[in-house]
Length: 367
Image (cartoon, rainbow, N blue to C red; front, side):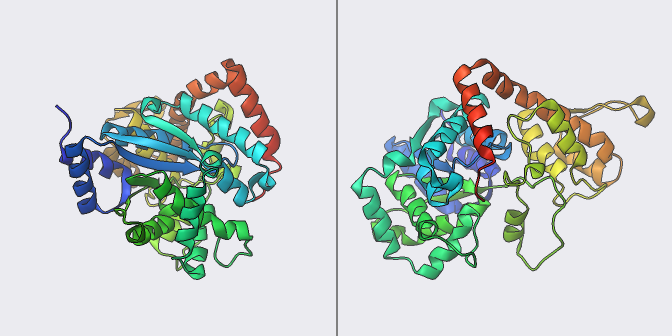
């Protein structure tokens, strides 16, 4: 017997920091399950450099949960979007090779690929119907609204933008309709274009796509001082970024690199909000492991095992668990998670060649 709708919604809610909205989700699930039609979610990435653990480990966790809920995935390798955003100076051949490296990482990181279809934007754009969709969306969207949506590609509406970068949100919105997906499973930083897609769906006589916005892991560096940004904008500002290597643990970092980054990471004692080391514990370690052993000297209380994240957080807030206790153990577990990825890229000649290529061209990356 399959999962009930309540059980499916529960799994999806575990992924969603923001779900827009549950009523529509339940209605869609009911219709699809009754008809026997597949339910599709999509996620997409610009091939723009090395993959960090938010794009690798956390993404695999989230994708697998939605698959458990009976959903199939369309993963868009957004090579044309990366070119429009001037990644690697818009060199499509370079971007395509970086995209192949992305796929190799996902192959090695525990994602249930039997329910994942990789789709390349460079295949979508060969179809005139795709560009017709882009045009129709642009005719229903003001320039000011489009500029606000440029946040999805790490830009601001006050930036000096290229015309290709203004086109980008229209393309991403078209992806949703052209790939015929029911759910957009993307980070909170992508919500503006998902909201646009929901608003204009009526013009295409289509149901509004469900938006499942997942949590974005905070970067390892100390956040900027409090500002007037709302909670969502502040989380976007603080997210792990590949443009700042010190803010992220990458999927092919060595044991020594992981330890050094975690050791330097911002992790104030007894402070919970925005603490990146606690975030990695909550969103990655406890999602992949039922227990988390804190190994420490007998002098400081000896080893201790947590079976619930909340207990760990409570002890940290009370000062019973210190950064010196937590950091080396988080580094140890993250390294264990990344060993199979490193081994894949060491043993697979094609994968190894792709990673060497990515490292070579990384220095040419345009922000």
